Image 1 (cartoon, rainbow, N blue to C red):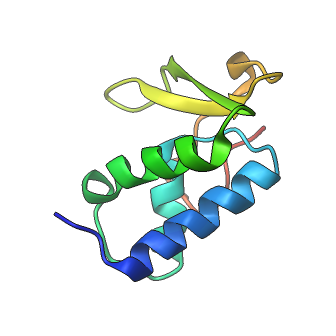
Image 2: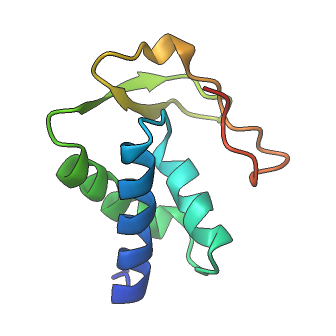
Amino acid sequence: MALDASTKRQIDGVVKNWLAENRMFTAFEISLAVKDQGVRERHRNMKEYVHEAIAREGGATYTRTLKDVGAPVQAWVYHTLRASPDNYRPLNRTDHDQPAAQ
């Protein structure tokens, strides 16, 4: 399913902001942040574009590590090259308005 231009812009905006803040996050958390802005799209439809946006914007300053995050499957945790992914704290899935602890 193709994403509309507005959804892509919102994803790009969240990705740019979180990268500028040197946040540690998953693609799912980006999807939730975009949904909080009013986008009505499922993560499964957004995740490919989210990963592309992170790769495009994160460039040489971000990497990803596959981790257990409290979900049924492992997820890519995006972090700066200097940050340890072991410091990542999974999103509290009962209240997704709160960002994961850093």
